[in-house]
Image 1 (cartoon, protein in one colour):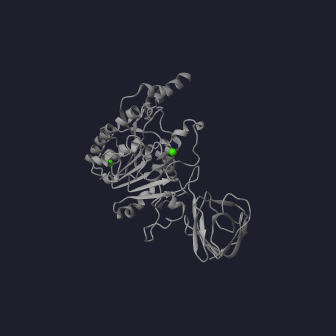
Image 2 (cartoon, rainbow, N blue to C red):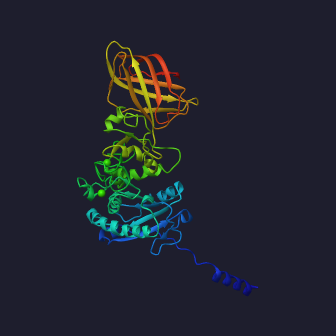
Image 3 (cartoon, protein in one colour):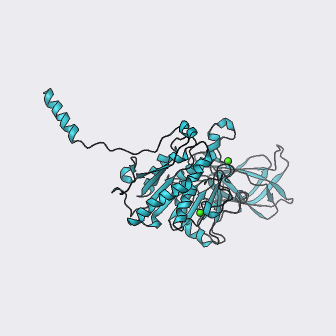
Length: 446
Ligand SMILES: [Ca+2]
Ligand SMILES: [Ca+2]
């Protein structure tokens, strides 16, 4: 009996398929970064059929590489510690969930891993040339440039730009996630990513004062929270390594949230962040009503609007929450007052739903000026939304004082949902606010 069992196991062992090997991203360490690495580029192919187990993309191409599908390249940046990017698996998985496509992870960890940034920088043109060789082969096998999408992070964004340039800007789309600033700031368009490098170029700037590029680079440039620093990121060196990379990396996490359901980040075309904060840019479409651009994967839905402009360049601003999923909800608060004297100050607003859930607005606008019979529109931004507004409470303040010296007499107030315009507008008439005292009331449908 025992012999029989051994025989059966042996037969099974011989007839079973050899286990498929998955290709993984090159793992290096800080020692490699100190010694430095020579450039080596590997392409890891993921499809819905092998969403978690990459195949090497080598010539001749494997059968699973279906060139009638879209192909998305993911190109990372400088790797000062040699570790694989933490966001990589989530990005691959999210893209494959959105669309039946080929995802090609461009692993140039050997070449990007170095403690000296300028060494990694010097490899960028070479990486672009190697990618162009692959794209040439793809084209020879029936692929179309329209179907090529490149997502480049930091240095990777400029690599995508170099590739796009080689095809005269005919590749479908490039997304730059906080494109690298050092050694690129101030450079002419042919030495960096720019809006002529693809049919559509969208860019997220999340660390313009440190690792990121300062000026606009794409057809649409998104500046979350103004683009310099991100909420929830360490403000001091006590935050450790995160202090250096958190703002920069936020661009990737914002993009990732666009691959999730339930929280579309809306951005507002505007000349400056302060104009956005002061509520000057909430209607999209440059005079004509149009949709507002959405950050991330669906940014290309705004392509035709951005290309109407001359030059085809738009800056878009928005605030985010300090953690996943980052989206916030915008409302306009229109107020008409009838005080005899002009009042300057701030309004804080709280919304309550039937169940008693409350959300409070973030206010960082300049003090508003309330003049008799003149409408003031304030932009209120909430980290959470409530489904049905049952209660509103307002506080009027004139500055860092605690007294209740002034009153603000409101003839009417209107709450207009901007992020979710399908929600009803709520109104209230005849309210008197006493400085620094909370006034709560029930609104009615307008
Ligand atoms: Ca360029
Ligand atoms: Ca910063």
